[in-house]
Image (cartoon, rainbow, N blue to C red):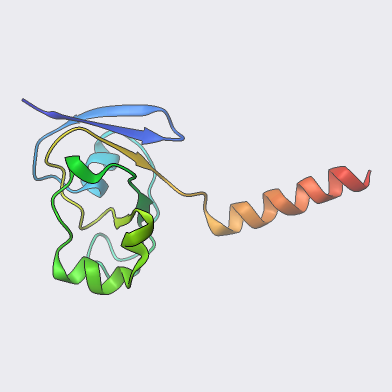
Length: 111
């Protein structure tokens, strides 16, 4: 029996096999999570937010070192976090897209 992994804000779900990483599941669900290192925990671009982590395996040593305390705010590395049960994953907005969106909103307010 699979685990239901939901991705926000994409509003997509996928039945995953336990033991798959969130990054692997996102690729199968066709949900984009940024990465440059292809899942080697080197680029740290695949940070996601998981408020209820009961459906994930505990952080491994590598993930704990790479996150450096961000795990206390619900962050996990999608390439390292392994699915063990149902879980909802929030993908943060790309920093460049966020900056452009804020700039466009400011321009609209000025018009």
